[in-house]
Amino acid sequence: MYTEIEQQTLDIDWFFTDGKYIGFVASGAGKLPKTVANSVKNNKKLVSYFRNLPQISDAIVSPLLDNLLTKIFGSGVDEKYLRDFISLTQKGLYSFDKTNLNDFMDNHYHLVTIPKNPLKISDLPPDILNFLELTQYHGEMEAITHLDVGKII
Image (cartoon, rainbow, N blue to C red; front, side, top):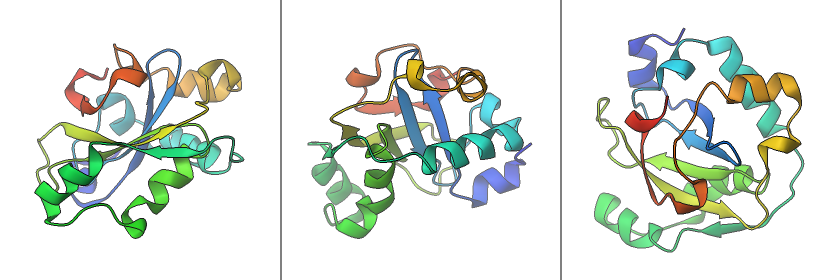
């Protein structure tokens, strides 16, 4: 289990599905969904699996990102910020980041990068799929520009 202190102080990678595609989230010290917080072991298996996949896609930077980052940080998108998101998106995952850093209870995340060729959950081995399906978003991944983690079960 990830303790509340760990959640408040770490940038934890975690994953979810809409039943078709996979989303990657950098927690930015935000509150994790219960399904993720309750199993460090399962989450580490997902992190290892997805980080070790081969590249299958090009990444598209969200067209809304530059304006959003300018509002948050006072400057737009740079390569250093994008590096990890692009890496996971090249594996076919939609990538999200915490919008309001250092606000543990704020559930808002924004889309960072989009895969041209998304990985489908039907491509996953059963053991990975079983872990991933515990964290579900009710909506379509392709339509998410702003993610409310409170709506993930």
